[in-house]
Amino acid sequence: MQFSKDQLGVKFKPFSKYPPCYKDMSFWINESFTENNLCEVVRGVAGDLVQEVQLIDNFTNKKGIASQCYQIAYRSMERSLTDEEINELQWNVREQVQSKLKVVLR
Image (cartoon, rainbow, N blue to C red; front, side):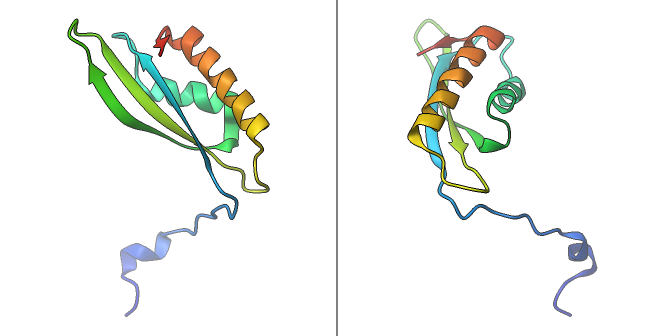
């Protein structure tokens, strides 16, 4: 038997044939920061053009203040995104993250 009984319910997930564009964002976090809230804000700004939000660096300075760096992958299922589109989205994401999550961008 090629597939076990448990694997039959696995659905195909379409993927984009267009390249992703990666943008990083670093900020000092506060005690109320959660990654889930960050993802909600990013999706609220960029919608379906966000493929992934991933923590790529975590740092705590000598004063005990934590900084995190996240990489955001933007990708469309229908077309290649332009630098102008991505830069505008990233700028809006940065503004919303700073205002809604009360973090300090680096």
